[in-house]
Length: 121
Image 1 (tube, rainbow, N blue to C red):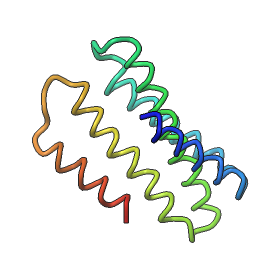
Image 2: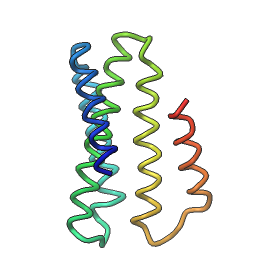
Image 3: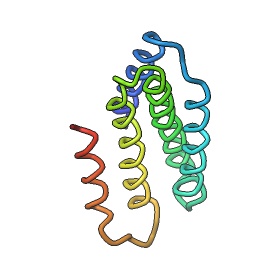
Image 4: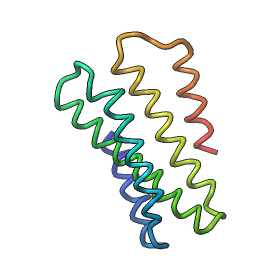
């Protein structure tokens, strides 16, 4: 998780040095990431250190989705980059649902691999 998190820091840094930040897009994704983190991880019975780490990681992923969406709105050539950021958040949300909830969802593994595979294209 640390390596992926560091890569997201690099993605965010690259985007914000390339173009002005689309603050509204960033804010909307961070709000969504906060809600997802709360619903999927924070309110579970997982140890506090895991809840905090997952919450921070969710904010990092949603920030990546936000800054890349803001960039794509300014320069549509970066739409694929934004889609990758969003798919990363979605696939890791599915992973968190699988890890932190007692009831396994049918086909959750397929959803994880589908969103993971799409973001790698």
